[in-house]
Length: 318
Image (tube, rainbow, N blue to C red):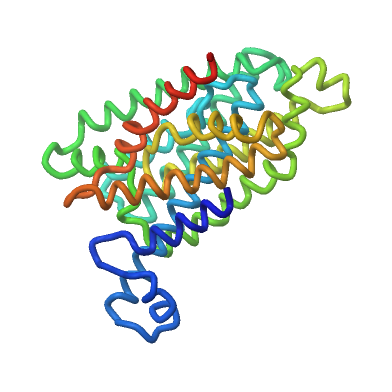
């Protein structure tokens, strides 16, 4: 999977409306080639490739973590409301006339707020963080629906000629406006979210036995679940804040990875990151190369992801 990602990155460097051959790459990277081609490669394509790799890896890790933590293979990274909250925050920021990093900051904060609200309400309903995954799932669905309703209200009140198209385009997802600054700001929260998940991935194997069995083995279920929620939420909120709504990656890729690596989360989480990064990078190449006008990335991942997920389910039943 690591080799696949490397090959995908190399191929993505050559894909685009500005033709660059494989033999030109060393000279362009070292600064001895055509100046215009070097600018396209270093300032546009590398930035976009990095954003696709980070976003695809983040959504896949968080999807695998949520599915293992909640013991539900149909769970996606937006199950606790992070994606809906981030989208609502971004829509509100665009409505208020903000742009660039301000939109991403508001989206990130709103995503974290949505998950904190989910966790607080589920604690109030169930009494403790170790009461099982079902209160979290149900509360997350409610909070996500509330923020989705907020998006609808914002779109209803937005200027239909300027603001509404901008909100709609952002919600479709894409990497066309990601800058090098966005990429650098994306690294810190993603690292804070990914490192604890990868280091504690083996404990997801214990959680998969159920809360009572995990507690009997000496695991603090409530604290461990909180760590995984915070880490996965940081990954999801950051990905949505930078790239918008990109669906199916966090649901499809963990399923595909489990078919290749098995259920051991020590292998599943890093493998999901590599495979998810490759998948989103290929999808982004198709989005910007299939037609003269770029296809929103979220639309393309849905078109590809839904039939692929159905195929995996049919193959698993057989």
